[in-house]
Length: 94
Image (cartoon, rainbow, N blue to C red; front, side, top):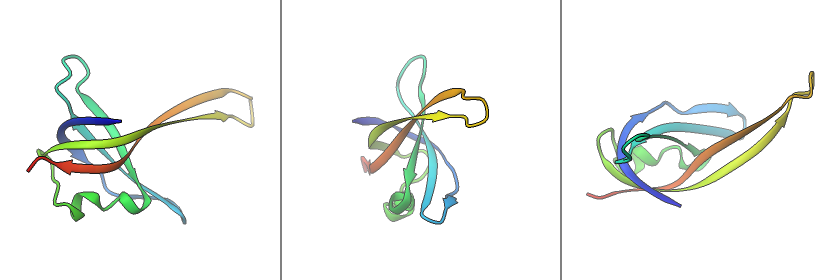
């Protein structure tokens, strides 16, 4: 899937475990009612902003996958579902 917008925010890289790190960012689209989309880069893609010279305010096209997972709380059996938007390619228009 792909989405276009302007980079609105970029977070610092987070080391979640020894083998997993992520970096969240937000793009602002031209959608009238819900323009802000939070996405994340994972592992080897975390340095994409520096690697390609992308900064806040830049127009980008992001290729991404939707990932969903189920989590069952061991203590009470409550089931929760999570959805993540995982970016794997970012291109600027300039």
